[in-house]
Image (cartoon, rainbow, N blue to C red; front, side, top):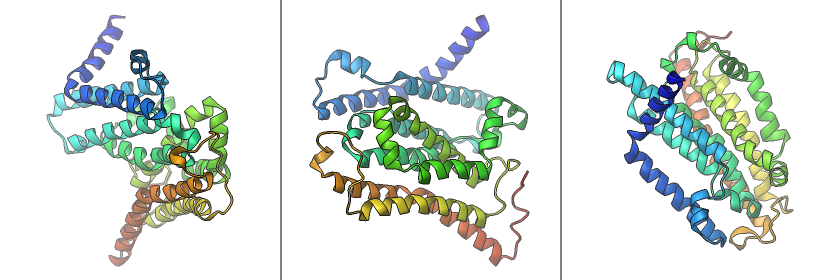
Length: 312
């Protein structure tokens, strides 16, 4: 029990030492929620600001993840002093990724999703295209010892890291299960609405881990050309869906509110959602471009890509 209490104390102290960062972030969150309720026309009382009618589970999880991250960072720096493999830009990138995750996952944005297919697209695709790469770039994968990756979590992650498994997951959530159908079911089921952002976040993290080869010994595609095609096909499926929404003359908008956000028509809101989906594909399209140029560089220099990656 004493060891457990000491662990919680050390864990909390890693956050308390950063109160200059935590305080303004907390104030921003409160202002964010207050502004959301004000725009929605809801009365802002003290209980509203204190409780904020939010789901505490994602926020508690986010705080726990950040606290654990800072704890490991402090311990590592106490031994090393400094290390290029875990620089401050990685720390801030990781924190930014968590904050973007929470802004999209559990914020006043949720109150307006029933009124706008565009916001629903931002909510889910933002997790995949914006939050996921920030989190991946903020994790010092080179410092994770192989002997520590034997638990059930790592075994599950390794299984999902297989391109064939990931491809099936992406095909289901991005192609077979159309986002408009996801929105329709999500608005009817609070559980689906709450869990879907996590599905998109985890999928995005795995795709970026695969692309950046953070664990060389894990199953993966062989070379940059295969990776470029893999990500490109995935993105083209999303961009094609966005194109269908943008050019469609028939509304497929599942928004259930009696009035649309900003006074838009359901069809125009659907067109905006299509534009949003295409625009949010930019980060991974940049990843496709990088893989393509890495492959071209290898071809021009007459190097074989086959020895670049290890496949189990």
